[in-house]
Amino acid sequence: MNIVYLKGQFMPSQEAMISPFDRGFLFGDSVYEVVPYFRGIGFRLQEHITRLEHSLRAVRIQAHTDWAAVMDELVARNGGGNLSVYLQVTRGDSGSRSHSYDASLTPTVFACCAPVRDFAAVSAEEVQELSAIVTADLRWHRCDIKSTGLLPNILVLQQARDHQADEALLLRDGVLTEGTSCNLFVVRQGVIYTPKRSSEILGGITRELVLGLADVNGMQYQEVDIDYDTLMNADEVWISSSTRGVLPVTRVDDRLIGDGKKGPVWARMFELLARYQHQLMTGESEL
Ligand code: PLP
Image (cartoon, rainbow, N blue to C red; front, side, top):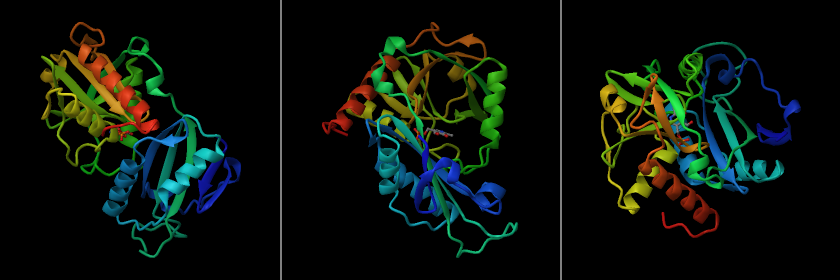
Protein backbone atom coordinates (compact mmCIF):
# COMPACT_ATOMS: atom_id res chain seq x y z
CA MET A 1 0.00 0.00 0.00
CA ASN A 2 3.09 2.09 0.03
CA ILE A 3 3.38 2.91 -3.65
CA VAL A 4 1.60 6.04 -4.87
CA TYR A 5 1.34 7.76 -8.23
CA LEU A 6 2.19 11.44 -8.49
CA LYS A 7 2.74 13.59 -11.59
CA GLY A 8 3.37 10.71 -13.96
CA GLN A 9 5.51 8.53 -11.66
CA PHE A 10 5.08 5.66 -9.24
CA MET A 11 7.03 6.08 -5.99
CA PRO A 12 7.02 5.17 -2.28
CA SER A 13 4.50 7.42 -0.47
CA GLN A 14 7.20 9.07 1.66
CA GLU A 15 8.84 10.41 -1.52
CA ALA A 16 5.64 12.01 -2.84
CA MET A 17 5.66 15.80 -2.51
CA ILE A 18 3.51 18.61 -3.84
CA SER A 19 3.93 22.35 -3.70
CA PRO A 20 1.98 24.34 -1.06
CA PHE A 21 0.96 26.51 -4.03
CA ASP A 22 -0.85 23.61 -5.62
CA ARG A 23 -4.43 24.82 -6.06
CA GLY A 24 -5.74 21.54 -4.70
CA PHE A 25 -4.06 22.37 -1.39
CA LEU A 26 -4.87 26.10 -1.32
CA PHE A 27 -8.44 26.10 -2.63
CA GLY A 28 -9.69 22.53 -2.88
CA ASP A 29 -9.52 23.30 -6.62
CA SER A 30 -9.64 19.63 -7.55
CA VAL A 31 -11.80 16.60 -8.19
CA TYR A 32 -11.43 12.95 -7.28
CA GLU A 33 -12.64 9.40 -7.69
CA VAL A 34 -12.61 6.31 -5.50
CA VAL A 35 -12.58 3.03 -7.41
CA PRO A 36 -12.74 -0.37 -5.70
CA TYR A 37 -10.62 -3.19 -7.07
CA PHE A 38 -11.60 -6.71 -6.13
CA ARG A 39 -9.10 -9.48 -6.76
CA GLY A 40 -7.01 -6.89 -8.57
CA ILE A 41 -9.78 -5.97 -11.07
CA GLY A 42 -11.42 -2.52 -11.22
CA PHE A 43 -15.13 -2.74 -10.37
CA ARG A 44 -17.22 -0.57 -12.75
CA LEU A 45 -13.94 1.10 -13.74
CA GLN A 46 -15.25 2.63 -16.96
CA GLU A 47 -18.23 4.16 -15.11
CA HIS A 48 -15.85 5.78 -12.61
CA ILE A 49 -13.69 7.14 -15.43
CA THR A 50 -16.76 8.57 -17.17
CA ARG A 51 -17.75 10.32 -13.93
CA LEU A 52 -14.20 11.61 -13.43
CA GLU A 53 -14.29 13.07 -16.93
CA HIS A 54 -17.66 14.69 -16.12
CA SER A 55 -16.16 16.26 -12.97
CA LEU A 56 -13.08 17.48 -14.86
CA ARG A 57 -15.17 18.98 -17.66
CA ALA A 58 -17.52 20.65 -15.17
CA VAL A 59 -14.65 22.46 -13.40
CA ARG A 60 -12.71 23.03 -16.63
CA ILE A 61 -9.58 21.09 -15.70
CA GLN A 62 -7.98 19.65 -18.81
CA ALA A 63 -6.15 16.49 -17.87
CA HIS A 64 -5.49 13.75 -20.38
CA THR A 65 -4.16 10.59 -18.81
CA ASP A 66 -4.85 6.93 -19.40
CA TRP A 67 -6.76 6.69 -16.12
CA ALA A 68 -7.39 2.96 -16.34
CA ALA A 69 -3.70 2.23 -17.00
CA VAL A 70 -2.58 4.38 -14.02
CA MET A 71 -5.06 2.75 -11.63
CA ASP A 72 -4.42 -0.80 -12.86
CA GLU A 73 -0.69 -0.38 -12.53
CA LEU A 74 -0.96 1.24 -9.10
CA VAL A 75 -3.03 -1.68 -7.83
CA ALA A 76 -0.61 -4.21 -9.35
CA ARG A 77 2.39 -2.42 -7.80
CA ASN A 78 0.64 -2.55 -4.42
CA GLY A 79 0.17 -6.30 -4.63
CA GLY A 80 -3.33 -6.49 -6.19
CA GLY A 81 -6.19 -8.09 -4.26
CA ASN A 82 -8.93 -5.96 -2.67
CA LEU A 83 -7.90 -2.32 -2.75
CA SER A 84 -9.65 0.97 -3.34
CA VAL A 85 -7.87 3.53 -5.49
CA TYR A 86 -8.16 7.19 -4.54
CA LEU A 87 -7.38 9.36 -7.55
CA GLN A 88 -7.24 13.16 -7.32
CA VAL A 89 -6.70 15.71 -10.07
CA THR A 90 -5.95 19.28 -9.06
CA ARG A 91 -5.80 22.29 -11.36
CA GLY A 92 -2.05 22.41 -10.70
CA ASP A 93 0.67 24.46 -9.05
CA SER A 94 0.24 28.16 -9.79
CA GLY A 95 3.39 29.27 -7.89
CA SER A 96 1.45 31.92 -5.94
CA ARG A 97 -1.96 32.32 -4.34
CA SER A 98 -4.57 33.87 -6.57
CA HIS A 99 -8.22 32.92 -7.05
CA SER A 100 -7.93 33.39 -10.79
CA TYR A 101 -6.08 30.73 -12.71
CA ASP A 102 -4.06 30.33 -15.85
CA ALA A 103 -5.69 27.79 -18.15
CA SER A 104 -2.27 26.50 -19.20
CA LEU A 105 -1.42 25.06 -15.75
CA THR A 106 -0.39 21.40 -15.69
CA PRO A 107 -2.88 19.47 -13.54
CA THR A 108 -1.45 17.48 -10.63
CA VAL A 109 -2.54 13.85 -10.68
CA PHE A 110 -2.17 11.88 -7.46
CA ALA A 111 -3.36 8.33 -6.69
CA CYS A 112 -2.94 6.00 -3.74
CA CYS A 113 -4.48 2.73 -2.50
CA ALA A 114 -6.17 1.57 0.69
CA PRO A 115 -7.52 -1.83 1.71
CA VAL A 116 -11.20 -2.34 0.92
CA ARG A 117 -13.55 -5.02 2.22
CA ASP A 118 -14.99 -7.27 -0.43
CA PHE A 119 -18.70 -6.75 0.23
CA ALA A 120 -19.48 -9.95 -1.69
CA ALA A 121 -17.37 -12.01 0.70
CA VAL A 122 -19.73 -11.67 3.69
CA SER A 123 -23.26 -13.01 4.05
CA ALA A 124 -26.30 -10.74 4.58
CA GLU A 125 -26.55 -12.09 8.16
CA GLU A 126 -23.06 -10.85 8.95
CA VAL A 127 -23.70 -7.27 7.76
CA GLN A 128 -23.93 -4.74 10.60
CA GLU A 129 -26.97 -2.47 10.77
CA LEU A 130 -26.17 1.24 10.74
CA SER A 131 -27.68 4.22 12.52
CA ALA A 132 -28.02 7.73 11.11
CA ILE A 133 -29.03 11.24 11.98
CA VAL A 134 -30.78 13.67 9.66
CA THR A 135 -29.23 17.08 9.38
CA ALA A 136 -29.12 20.11 7.07
CA ASP A 137 -27.33 19.69 3.74
CA LEU A 138 -24.80 22.53 3.90
CA ARG A 139 -23.10 21.75 0.59
CA TRP A 140 -23.01 23.72 -2.65
CA HIS A 141 -25.45 23.12 -5.51
CA ARG A 142 -23.07 21.12 -7.75
CA CYS A 143 -22.92 17.89 -5.78
CA ASP A 144 -22.87 16.01 -9.11
CA ILE A 145 -19.21 17.09 -9.31
CA LYS A 146 -16.99 14.87 -7.18
CA SER A 147 -15.01 17.78 -5.79
CA THR A 148 -12.54 17.58 -2.90
CA GLY A 149 -14.29 20.51 -1.16
CA LEU A 150 -15.60 18.13 1.52
CA LEU A 151 -15.71 20.33 4.62
CA PRO A 152 -19.53 20.17 4.97
CA ASN A 153 -19.41 16.36 4.60
CA ILE A 154 -16.69 16.12 7.25
CA LEU A 155 -18.52 18.36 9.71
CA VAL A 156 -21.87 16.58 9.45
CA LEU A 157 -20.25 13.15 9.67
CA GLN A 158 -18.62 14.30 12.90
CA GLN A 159 -22.02 15.56 14.07
CA ALA A 160 -23.33 12.02 13.46
CA ARG A 161 -20.40 10.51 15.36
CA ASP A 162 -21.05 12.91 18.27
CA HIS A 163 -24.54 11.34 18.41
CA GLN A 164 -23.04 7.81 18.30
CA ALA A 165 -24.49 7.41 14.79
CA ASP A 166 -22.71 6.01 11.74
CA GLU A 167 -23.99 8.35 9.03
CA ALA A 168 -25.65 11.69 8.46
CA LEU A 169 -28.51 11.87 5.95
CA LEU A 170 -28.83 15.30 4.43
CA LEU A 171 -31.99 17.38 4.12
CA ARG A 172 -32.31 20.31 1.74
CA ASP A 173 -35.50 22.30 1.08
CA GLY A 174 -37.58 19.63 2.82
CA VAL A 175 -36.22 16.68 0.83
CA LEU A 176 -33.45 14.20 1.54
CA THR A 177 -30.52 14.31 -0.85
CA GLU A 178 -27.98 11.63 0.19
CA GLY A 179 -25.49 10.77 2.94
CA THR A 180 -22.05 12.26 3.56
CA SER A 181 -20.43 9.76 1.18
CA CYS A 182 -23.31 7.57 0.01
CA ASN A 183 -26.63 7.57 -1.81
CA LEU A 184 -29.94 6.93 -0.10
CA PHE A 185 -32.74 4.40 -0.70
CA VAL A 186 -35.97 3.80 1.20
CA VAL A 187 -38.41 0.93 0.79
CA ARG A 188 -42.14 1.12 1.36
CA GLN A 189 -44.49 -1.79 0.66
CA GLY A 190 -41.89 -3.55 -1.46
CA VAL A 191 -41.11 -0.53 -3.69
CA ILE A 192 -37.62 1.00 -3.68
CA TYR A 193 -37.47 4.81 -3.69
CA THR A 194 -34.37 6.95 -4.18
CA PRO A 195 -33.86 10.70 -4.71
CA LYS A 196 -33.90 11.81 -8.33
CA ARG A 197 -30.58 12.34 -10.05
CA SER A 198 -29.81 16.09 -10.04
CA SER A 199 -27.01 18.51 -9.26
CA GLU A 200 -27.98 18.14 -5.56
CA ILE A 201 -26.60 14.59 -5.37
CA LEU A 202 -23.65 12.62 -6.65
CA GLY A 203 -24.58 10.24 -9.44
CA GLY A 204 -23.38 7.22 -7.49
CA ILE A 205 -21.96 4.31 -9.48
CA THR A 206 -23.50 1.91 -6.96
CA ARG A 207 -26.82 3.79 -7.09
CA GLU A 208 -26.97 3.24 -10.86
CA LEU A 209 -26.03 -0.40 -10.41
CA VAL A 210 -28.71 -0.93 -7.76
CA LEU A 211 -31.35 0.56 -10.09
CA GLY A 212 -30.04 -1.55 -12.99
CA LEU A 213 -30.20 -4.71 -10.89
CA ALA A 214 -33.71 -3.79 -9.71
CA ASP A 215 -34.74 -3.40 -13.36
CA VAL A 216 -33.29 -6.68 -14.55
CA ASN A 217 -34.75 -8.57 -11.59
CA GLY A 218 -38.27 -7.15 -11.72
CA MET A 219 -38.00 -5.16 -8.49
CA GLN A 220 -40.11 -2.00 -8.52
CA TYR A 221 -38.36 1.33 -8.01
CA GLN A 222 -39.03 5.05 -8.38
CA GLU A 223 -36.76 8.10 -8.40
CA VAL A 224 -38.68 10.65 -6.34
CA ASP A 225 -38.44 13.37 -3.71
CA ILE A 226 -38.29 11.81 -0.25
CA ASP A 227 -39.27 13.94 2.73
CA TYR A 228 -38.48 13.38 6.40
CA ASP A 229 -41.81 11.69 7.23
CA THR A 230 -41.44 9.29 4.29
CA LEU A 231 -37.98 8.39 5.53
CA MET A 232 -39.07 7.84 9.11
CA ASN A 233 -42.12 5.78 8.08
CA ALA A 234 -40.23 3.61 5.61
CA ASP A 235 -40.09 -0.16 6.03
CA GLU A 236 -36.39 -0.11 5.16
CA VAL A 237 -33.65 2.48 4.65
CA TRP A 238 -30.34 1.72 2.89
CA ILE A 239 -27.25 3.56 1.81
CA SER A 240 -24.95 2.70 -1.09
CA SER A 241 -21.38 3.43 -2.10
CA SER A 242 -18.59 1.83 -4.09
CA THR A 243 -16.58 0.82 -1.05
CA ARG A 244 -19.54 -0.23 1.12
CA GLY A 245 -21.99 -1.78 -1.34
CA VAL A 246 -25.55 -1.53 0.05
CA LEU A 247 -25.93 -1.29 3.82
CA PRO A 248 -29.09 -1.25 5.94
CA VAL A 249 -29.86 1.72 8.19
CA THR A 250 -32.20 0.53 10.93
CA ARG A 251 -32.20 3.53 13.28
CA VAL A 252 -32.61 7.20 12.31
CA ASP A 253 -32.67 10.07 14.79
CA ASP A 254 -32.92 7.49 17.61
CA ARG A 255 -36.07 5.90 16.15
CA LEU A 256 -36.30 2.43 14.67
CA ILE A 257 -37.00 2.10 10.95
CA GLY A 258 -39.71 -0.52 10.36
CA ASP A 259 -39.14 -3.34 12.82
CA GLY A 260 -35.56 -2.21 13.41
CA LYS A 261 -34.09 -5.17 11.52
CA LYS A 262 -32.47 -5.62 8.12
CA GLY A 263 -35.29 -5.83 5.59
CA PRO A 264 -36.03 -8.50 2.96
CA VAL A 265 -35.77 -6.09 0.01
CA TRP A 266 -32.33 -4.98 1.20
CA ALA A 267 -31.29 -8.63 1.65
CA ARG A 268 -32.37 -9.41 -1.93
CA MET A 269 -30.46 -6.42 -3.33
CA PHE A 270 -27.43 -7.31 -1.22
CA GLU A 271 -27.41 -10.82 -2.72
CA LEU A 272 -27.93 -9.49 -6.27
CA LEU A 273 -25.06 -7.06 -5.88
CA ALA A 274 -22.76 -9.74 -4.48
CA ARG A 275 -23.67 -12.11 -7.31
CA TYR A 276 -23.18 -9.37 -9.91
CA GLN A 277 -19.77 -8.51 -8.49
CA HIS A 278 -18.75 -12.16 -8.59
CA GLN A 279 -20.02 -12.55 -12.17
CA LEU A 280 -18.26 -9.39 -13.31
CA MET A 281 -14.97 -10.57 -11.87
CA THR A 282 -15.39 -13.92 -13.61
CA GLY A 283 -16.66 -12.42 -16.89
CA GLU A 284 -20.23 -13.76 -16.67
CA SER A 285 -22.28 -10.60 -15.95
CA GLU A 286 -25.45 -9.70 -17.87
CA LEU A 287 -25.39 -5.91 -17.12
N1 PLP B 1 -22.70 10.50 -2.55
C1 PLP B 1 -21.57 11.06 -2.11
C2 PLP B 1 -21.61 12.45 -1.58
C3 PLP B 1 -20.36 10.33 -2.16
O1 PLP B 1 -19.22 10.91 -1.74
C4 PLP B 1 -20.38 9.01 -2.65
C5 PLP B 1 -19.15 8.22 -2.71
O2 PLP B 1 -18.12 8.57 -2.24
C6 PLP B 1 -21.59 8.47 -3.08
C7 PLP B 1 -22.74 9.25 -3.03
C8 PLP B 1 -21.66 7.07 -3.61
O3 PLP B 1 -21.12 7.02 -4.90
P1 PLP B 1 -20.46 5.70 -5.48
O4 PLP B 1 -21.52 4.65 -5.46
O5 PLP B 1 -20.06 6.08 -6.84
O6 PLP B 1 -19.31 5.35 -4.60
